[in-house]
Image (tube, rainbow, N blue to C red):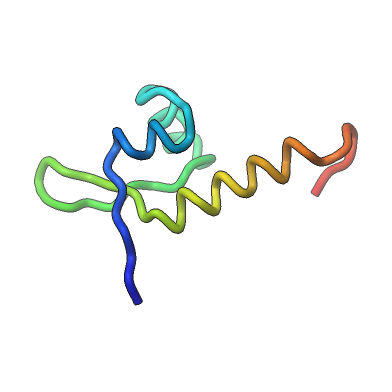
Length: 68
Protein backbone atom coordinates (compact mmCIF):
# COMPACT_ATOMS: atom_id res chain seq x y z
CA UNK A 1 0.00 0.00 0.00
CA UNK A 2 1.43 3.35 -0.99
CA UNK A 3 0.49 6.47 0.87
CA UNK A 4 1.46 9.89 -0.35
CA UNK A 5 2.10 12.49 2.32
CA UNK A 6 1.15 16.05 1.46
CA UNK A 7 2.84 18.95 3.17
CA UNK A 8 0.93 22.09 4.17
CA UNK A 9 1.58 24.18 1.00
CA UNK A 10 0.18 21.37 -1.16
CA UNK A 11 -2.81 20.84 1.13
CA UNK A 12 -3.53 24.58 1.06
CA UNK A 13 -3.45 24.70 -2.74
CA UNK A 14 -5.64 21.59 -3.08
CA UNK A 15 -8.39 22.67 -0.73
CA UNK A 16 -8.19 26.45 -1.07
CA UNK A 17 -8.12 27.24 2.66
CA UNK A 18 -5.59 29.21 4.66
CA UNK A 19 -3.18 27.66 7.17
CA UNK A 20 -5.11 29.00 10.15
CA UNK A 21 -8.44 27.74 8.79
CA UNK A 22 -6.99 24.28 8.22
CA UNK A 23 -5.66 24.12 11.78
CA UNK A 24 -8.99 25.44 13.10
CA UNK A 25 -10.81 22.62 11.29
CA UNK A 26 -8.29 20.09 12.66
CA UNK A 27 -8.89 21.38 16.21
CA UNK A 28 -12.67 21.05 15.75
CA UNK A 29 -12.28 17.55 14.32
CA UNK A 30 -13.73 18.54 10.96
CA UNK A 31 -10.51 18.03 8.98
CA UNK A 32 -8.12 15.05 9.12
CA UNK A 33 -5.34 15.22 11.69
CA UNK A 34 -1.83 15.47 10.29
CA UNK A 35 0.74 12.73 10.78
CA UNK A 36 4.10 13.43 12.38
CA UNK A 37 7.05 13.11 10.02
CA UNK A 38 9.65 14.15 12.55
CA UNK A 39 10.24 16.56 15.43
CA UNK A 40 9.28 19.62 13.36
CA UNK A 41 7.50 18.21 10.32
CA UNK A 42 3.95 17.09 9.66
CA UNK A 43 1.90 16.14 6.64
CA UNK A 44 -1.48 14.78 5.67
CA UNK A 45 -2.30 11.53 3.93
CA UNK A 46 -3.39 12.37 0.40
CA UNK A 47 -6.25 9.87 0.69
CA UNK A 48 -7.57 11.64 3.82
CA UNK A 49 -7.47 15.03 2.09
CA UNK A 50 -9.17 13.69 -1.05
CA UNK A 51 -11.87 12.00 1.05
CA UNK A 52 -12.49 15.25 2.94
CA UNK A 53 -12.74 17.16 -0.35
CA UNK A 54 -15.20 14.63 -1.79
CA UNK A 55 -17.38 14.90 1.32
CA UNK A 56 -17.41 18.70 1.05
CA UNK A 57 -18.45 18.52 -2.61
CA UNK A 58 -21.19 16.01 -1.77
CA UNK A 59 -22.39 18.20 1.11
CA UNK A 60 -22.51 21.31 -1.07
CA UNK A 61 -24.57 19.57 -3.76
CA UNK A 62 -27.13 18.13 -1.35
CA UNK A 63 -30.52 19.86 -1.67
CA UNK A 64 -31.19 22.45 1.03
CA UNK A 65 -32.77 21.04 4.17
CA UNK A 66 -31.66 17.46 3.52
CA UNK A 67 -29.38 15.89 6.11
CA UNK A 68 -27.05 12.99 5.46
